[in-house]
Structures are given as C-alpha cells and as structure tokens.
Image 1 (cartoon, rainbow, N blue to C red):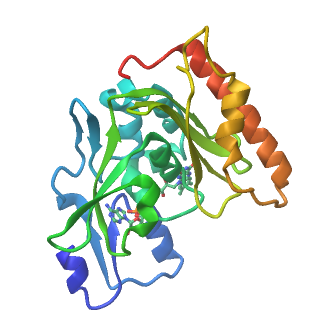
Image 2: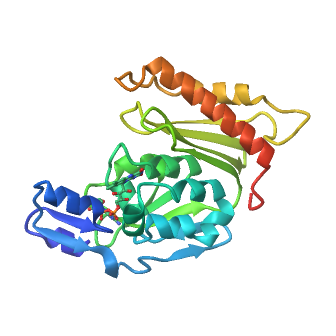
Image 3: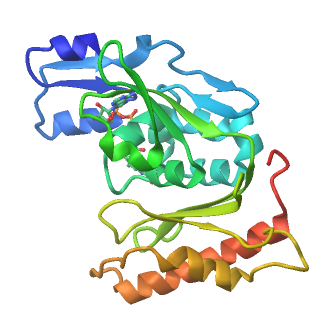
Length: 262
Ligand SMILES: Cc1cc2nc3c(=O)[nH]c(=O)nc-3n(C[C@H](O)[C@H](O)[C@H](O)COP(=O)(O)OP(=O)(O)OC[C@H]3O[C@@H](n4cnc5c(N)ncnc54)[C@H](O)[C@@H]3O)c2cc1C
C-alpha cells in the first residue's frame, strides 16, 4: 500500500500476474509493479467456526483443492477445478480474479451469491470490510488482503459455468435469522453482476410444506434486470435458459439434501 502511494506514476499490484502481464504485453504502461508475495498470510486458508478466510495469493487450483472450502462448498470446488486452463489455475489468484474488475470473470458472481466479505487496505492504516456485492465501491488503489467465505449456515450452493457466454450464475441457500434466504447472482448479458435475494416461506428440504422449484425460480428471477440481446442470444432466450438451469439446480440441491456444515 505504501509502495503504491509512493509510486511516482501508475503502479499496479501483482498477484499471479496473468492479467497484468497480458496487459503489459498489449502495451499498458505502469511505473511500478508491486508483487504481493510479502503480504502477511499471502497463501493461507484459515478456518474458524464461522468462516473460511482466503489469502490474496491463493490460486484457483489451491482454492478448488482446499479441504476446508470443499467441506462447505463442494459444488463450487467442482466448478472451480474446471475454470480457465491448468496454466491459469496454478498461477492466477482468486483475489486477482476479483480485483481485475473484468465482467467476463466468474468469481465476483460467486462471491456475491455466497455472501463473501472482502477485507482490504484503503490506506496504509485503514483496514475495511465490505460485502462482495459492494466491491465496486473499492477505491482503485485498494489492496485486497483477505476474502472471507461464510462457513456456518450455508445449506447449499450451485455454480453453473457451462453455458457461458449465454448464461452463468451462482445460487446459494443460507439459514439466516429471518429464515432461509436464497441468493442468485448472474452474469452474461448484464453490464455488472445482477443479483436477487428472496426469503423462502418454507424450508427448502421440507417434503410436506414447500415451495415448488418453479415458484422459487420465478421469485429469484423476477427482480433481475432484463439481460441484453446480442449475436449469441436474445434477451428472451437468456431469460428462459436461466430459469431452466436455475430450476434444475434447485431440484438437484433438493435431491442432494442440505450441506452438513449448514
Ligand atoms: C486463457 C484464460 C482463460 C480464463 N478463463 C477464465 C474463466 O473461465 N473464468 C474466470 O473467472 N476467469 C478466467 N480467466 C481469468 C483468470 O482467472 C484471471 O486472469 C486470474 O484470476 C487473475 O489472477 P492473477 O493473480 O493472475 O491477477 P494479476 O494479473 O496479478 O492481477 C489482476 C488485476 O488485479 C489486481 N490485483 C491482483 N491482486 C490484487 C490484490 N490482492 N489487491 C488489489 N488488486 C489486486 C492487479 O493489479 C491487476 O489489476 C482466464 C484467463 C485466461 C488467460
């Protein structure tokens, strides 16, 4: 942070460097490159009763292979083990994916759906935390120091990345003090990640009194903005496909049952 502030010109943090190097090769100019390898606990994954805290140097592969992450988010780890390609997964970091502010990247959507918290330094002394749905508010020079994933109360998560670039989403169900809350975060067809939250009337897994997967899907999708139309898909097709895929994921979640950690 201090190095960044003292840089006479444009400075850039470097995690795995996969995006930064591509930008430099394409002609971007920076005065100083600040490698983040000396950030404390750079590559650590720390579990507590309530949360799993991810260091900014954790690569996609280490994240996908992490035992504590898999215990709570098995479907996320399955999806993440196929993100990008091997070379990117062993070098690129989850933090870099978030901080690249690239609309075609997937972790911002996942972080919003699961209710992740981002801890960052906005000056040498000021440490702040924001929920992932407010990451756009992070100042340009902010240094992301930890990503915290909630551990307790997570009932189920689904991550759908196979229909990119027509549809991609992350869906979670969590036990909150108001009841069970579903959160759907969607990208593809939106300028920024679009998301919606609903409170379920009944337990997701209650066989006798429960909302149908169609009803839950309709409610989750109702408050999303309209996606765009482009040469890949019309807005109508995107909306339709999203509903079909979300409904299937809810049915899959019901068959699989609640996450034991929840
Ligand atoms: C071929 C290919 C396929 C890909 N496929 C996918 C995909 O399917 N899904 C997907 O989501 N992504 C995909 N990606 C993107 C990839 O995940 C990112 O390139 C990678 O995560 C970036 O991480 P990094 O550590 O290398 O970032 P870096 O290049 O080090 O940094 C990226 C940006 O974030 C900033 N930054 C990095 N760390 C911090 C920090 N701690 N605090 C503040 N700022 C920071 C840097 O200054 C820079 O601006 C793909 C990339 C490639 C090249």
